[in-house]
Length: 406
Ligand SMILES: Nc1nc2c(ncn2[C@@H]2O[C@H](COP(=O)(O)OP(=O)(O)OP(=O)(O)O)[C@@H](O)[C@H]2O)c(=O)[nH]1
Ligand SMILES: [Mg+2]
Image (cartoon, rainbow, N blue to C red; front, side, top):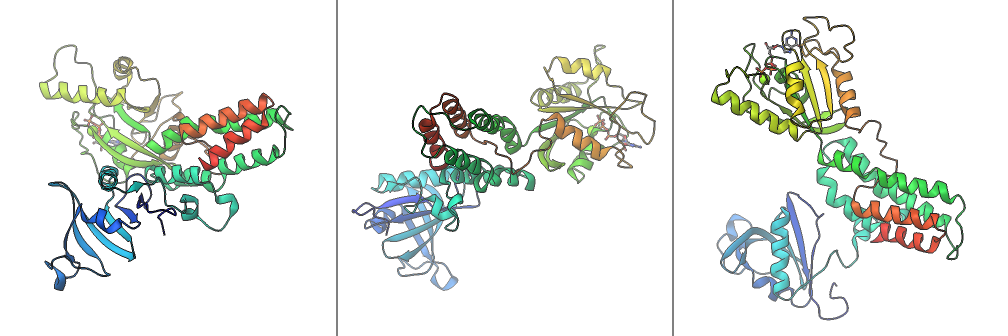
């Protein structure tokens, strides 16, 4: 089946690339059994009655271990769906899958980038416009990074619509055009491609889950707000200032956008040398998290002002700061304060989520809109746009075909 018309034995990763629970590797061809036999030690057919039996053969599932010499690589469940085909199920970390493929290659298998029938076939047989294997492969590689349904929609929309549809429309707009001839509506078309490329930074931020850090003076309500946004009591809350020492980082979803939210120790001016050694470390660790933030929510309340903290943040080179007045149920926010919340009554929390997403530049992302999510895609879109503007539809078509098909 997979011997490419000669006597080659192929090995390929049949599960999506990237992190996952299990990885499936298929070995197919005349030497499949021999190559696999060199790295696999069977522990017997699965099922109590077969445990410990030597070299069980035939159909059914085999449990065993994969070795590189004396080094144990992983446990594996193995089956033979047909003659000369071995299906190997191992744990899904990319390192284990890569090492297993390397071992099979060292044993004589040819490692293929994708199944012989090609990834497009694996994704769908149904619609021509869905045969975009390069974008589909990149989507599968990124899919585990999409940590909310909105992020998933923005990613998956590019394969079945968005980016793929735009590229197909652009190709058909240039169908049959000779080299050095202008494309109708060239400027508008090139702009659409450039716009799709410009979305790369946003898509990367969305897929990595931005780092949002809660900062403020002790007792300003950071931990209370962290617990509310995460949806469970992840940090200790107490009326005594200085409760949080080690920072606490958890996933949360703000208005559909997945983020990592970090609650930090309260920061205050200790120029009088009143910090204890532990407090000093806690504040240093808070600054470390703030320096890496995509957005800092700087909390302040009537009893915990922000000015000293804001000065302290300057050293962290933190540009994206949203000032949030807390405990609005206890003290009415001062005039001119445009973002006030109460973690007790919930007032202002929805507005805080929306403002945070906007401050991250991730508001109003429409999953149907064409958006590049890899550097390869953005690069090809920009090249295609440049070619269209230079009246080279032949080149532009080539770049766009490459975008879709690899
Ligand atoms: N009424 C009211 N009390 C709040 C609100 N937010 C926090 N508090 C109270 O303020 C006190 C301090 O809250 P924390 O969330 O522990 O404050 P923090 O900023 O994490 O404090 P440190 O960890 O010490 O820096 C607790 O008694 C909370 O119950 C709020 O919105 N309304
Ligand atoms: Mg705290």
